[in-house]
Image (cartoon, rainbow, N blue to C red; front, side):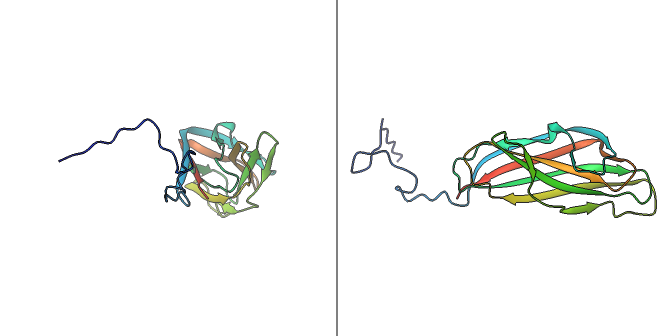
Length: 167
């Protein structure tokens, strides 16, 4: 036998609105929000200073709490046509439109400065961040090359996901 309970409002004993914690439901460590993107990327970069790969690579969420953390992850193919060419991959963050800043340092050196030409591979990175804000937070990959030209995307797919982890 099946039973159905229908109510218009649930209140605490004091007459207030119940929260997940007052009902004994913990939200800590659970994924609160997720946003993602994927598109065809094909960008040649020659800059030896850090620059954004492409503004389409950005992902944003507004945290539900200042104590939330974020996980930003992405991957894309790249092609290095010249010998002895590599690149550095970083993650930049913008909070509430205040401007981008490097939060990861120079995390990863790719392409390893190979002595051969025609290196094609996949770059991927995952980063955990605690921005301590309730303003919109935007993440984007930045790169710089050692020399010559690196093609980011090589007409392949850029995939990225941004998740809020509840505190």
